[in-house]
Image (tube, rainbow, N blue to C red; front, side):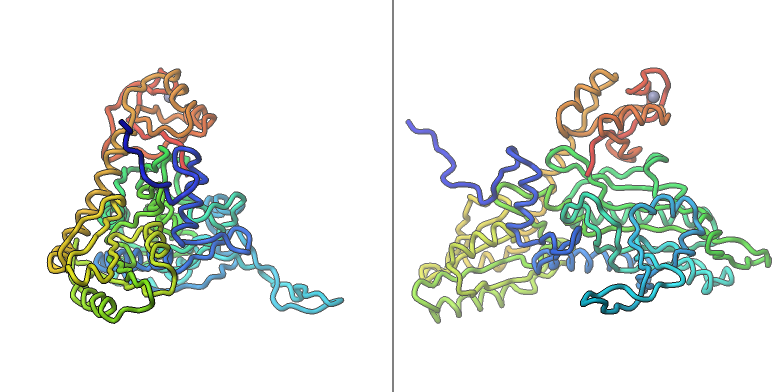
Length: 501
Ligand SMILES: [Zn+2]
C-alpha cells in the first residue's frame, strides 16, 4: 500500500519550517505585496499590498472617527528646535533621524550638489508629537477648546540600519492619533480607549489574537509616562508589537506650551496622548496567516473576496464570459461580517488560467472559482476556500450567491481560531526559574514565557542578553504574581517575555 502523499509542491519556497525568514520574504514577493526599493531601506508597496493597506485604512479610520476624532494633516518637516524641547523624546529618536540640511541643487563640474544650507535644519518626521504640539499651542486657549481629538494618516521616516520589508523600513505608512485633554483622567481614559480600539481591530478585522498590556518603563515611547501595546505571536513564536497607545502626561504640553484657561481662570497645561498603527500590520498578517502556498488574507480586509478565473482554452468564450459577469453581479455588494461589502474580480487577463489560479492562491484571495464550459452547463462551481487550499467544494451557483457571506465568515473564523490556538499553545506558564528560562530561549523563538518579573532593570538586562524583552504586563492571558523568574528573589507581577520583531 502506498501512503497518500501531498500531490504537489508548495507554492512558496523555502517553506516555513526550513527557513522562516526566507519564507517571509518569499511570501511578500510571491503575493505581490511589496519590494524593497531601489532606494535603500524603503519599500515599493505593490497594488495588492496597497489594496490591503487601503482596507486597513478604511475600517480603522471609521473606528477612529466613531470614537470622536477628526483627520488633519501636518507638515512632513519638523524644525530641529521643536524636537529639542522634549529631552527624552529627542534622545529616543536622535539616532533614527533623517535631517534636511540644504535646499537647492547646483551643478558643479557636471555633478549636482546641495547648494544652499538651511539656517535651521529640518527633520523628516519620525512621529508628529512636536509639530502637532506647536499647532495645539496656538489652537488651545480655553477649556472650551478641549478635548482636541486629531488623527493623521501619513508617512514617517526612521533611519533603519537593518531594514526588513513591512517590519522595519526607513519610510513607512501609518496613522497617528494626537489628543489634548483638560485632565489627567480624561487623557488616560483616551489612551486606554484607543488601545482597546487597536485590539478590536487586530482581532475582529485582521483575525489576529493579541495580548493587550502595558509596556515596562524601558520599552516606553520616548517622552511618554505610560505606553500600552497589543502584542501578537508570529508563527515562529516571536512577538510583534502591532499597535501602541501612549499617555504622555504633561510632558509634551509643557514642551510646546499647550495651555488653557480653566473655568476658574487658572492657566494649566493640557494632558496629551498619542497612538499609532502602521504598515507593520501587513507584516503581522503575513506571519500570522501565511502558509507554504503564500499569503492568506483575512476576508474583512481583503481587497477582493471572490476571484473568478475563466477557463477559456481557445480564446474568449461568450457563454463563459456572460456566466462570470452574471455571477459577479449577483454576488457583488452582498454583506458579511460586520457589514463588509463583498468585492469580486473576474481575472480575464491573457495569462494561462493555471498561472492565474496560483497567483491568487499566493496572494491569498479568500475565495477562488474557475469557470469553464462545464461549469456553465452544470451550474455547479468548484469553490476553493483559501483556508484549506487543497479542498474544492462543489457549490451550486445559487447557493454560492446565497451563502457567500457565510463562507467568508467561515474563513475569518478559521484564521482566528488557528492563530488563537497557536498563541495559547505558545504561552509557557511552567517556566519558573532562570535555568529553565535560559534553556527555553536557547532554542530560537519558541514562544512567550508568562512569569513574574520583579521590575528591576538588572533582571531585564539579564533577559536582554538572551535577546528577550518584557513584551508587556498583560491585561489578558497573564499569570499570577510571585517570585521573579530571573533573580528568584524579589516578588513581582506576571509579565510576558519573548523575542520580538
Ligand atoms: Zn528579578
